[in-house]
Amino acid sequence: MAMLESEMEDLLIKQLTCDVSQWTYRPDLTTEDALWNNLREKLNRNNIDKLQGIPLTDGEMAQVKSFLLDQASTTYKAARWLSGEHQVAQIPILRDDASLGEVNLMAVNSREVAGGSSSYEVINQYQAVKGEGSERNRRFDVTLLINGLPLIHIELKNRDHPFMDAFRQITKYCEEGKFRGLMGLVQMFVVSNGEQTRYIAADNHGNMNEKFLTRWVNEENEPVENYLSFAKAALNIPAAHLMVGKYCVLDNERKKVILLRPYQIHAIEAIRKASRDRESGFIWHTTGSGKTLTSYTVTKNLLDIPSMDKAIFLIDRKDLDQQTTSSFLSYADSDDIDVRNTEHTGDLEDKLKSKDRCAIVTTIQKLQNIIRRCTDEDASPKYQKLQEQISKKTIAFVVDECHRAVTPESKRAIE
Image 1 (cartoon, helix red, strand yellow):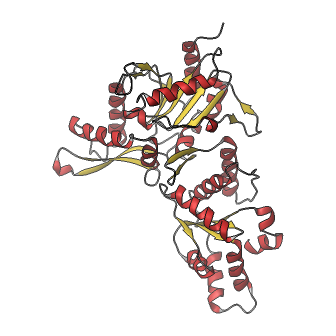
Image 2 (image 1 turned 180 degrees about the vertical axis):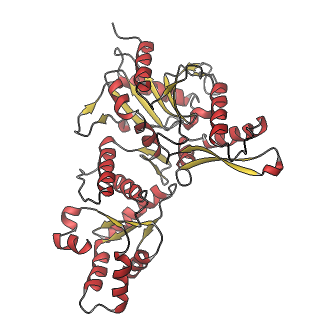
Image 3 (image 1 turned 90 degrees about the vertical axis):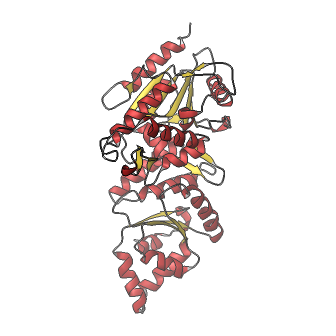
């Protein structure tokens, strides 16, 4: 006889809450009112200085609700807000006491993962009441809250059912309007029958394509199918916060949320570690496996390193340069990252000299023009000065198609 779903929930919560600095179980948070009250406590605690020690009034909390309900109207809009300025999502309110003026409340700080102001709670059996799209109440299985905001939802079926039944159930709940209000902020869905587990970027209107359901693999590329093993690997703290904070990319052109696949995340983490040690390496991608997304996220994350002045993404051909720049700009629309294209070699020279911390998408040919002019024995004073200016900066180079685009001689020249 297959295990009951309630037993599966209990085991999942036990896994999520084991060890220190993991999720805290909140069995009391089963209604929307309870979620709002919990969020109010979080906002008061995390913004005590901004609020000058005066807790939010009912009127101010009504402003908070109005703002968040607007952000949660679509998952994409919620994701744009959550990405925040400098990775901090804020809620603007006007205080009831006019002398206190306007305040921007910190809701989620994705720079403070597993520390600082971030809190992590797990709830189950949340009561989604009937609404415009349905005459039935629903009970959700397990939901993960970051700073009181529901950002990851897990739907379970027992082993007598395929995991796709859980996916179809979530889609139905979306179509019924159950993922509205605070639940409209959810960014990631997880579905499982215990033996097979998948995750997918959320869409609170149910517009999700099952082909994007993704299974987790470990760093050795071995599948992680069991739901408890998945929770241990991908839903621990900090992994879960990183997934919806740093490994969530917004496609402005398609108005979609994209969650990176596990092999992309493992690659990015390896690059981040190597970058801290000033080491180089290469990432091998098959065609159609999301190279541009990986490249963009790598470039963005490199600029998170305080000592990094610029991250340069090198392309071999002009047509690819335009195509990649277009993709980068679409992804960067809701990010802090400043992506700059280069029209000609002189344009690249200016961007290299500037003091702005930014990502630059350019062709290898333009960079080689600059290298040749700077290293020429008869280099003009202009290029002697340019070489001096550039050599003082800390620059990361991400090279597209590096196996054929950069020769050993070119690599040494760049270094």
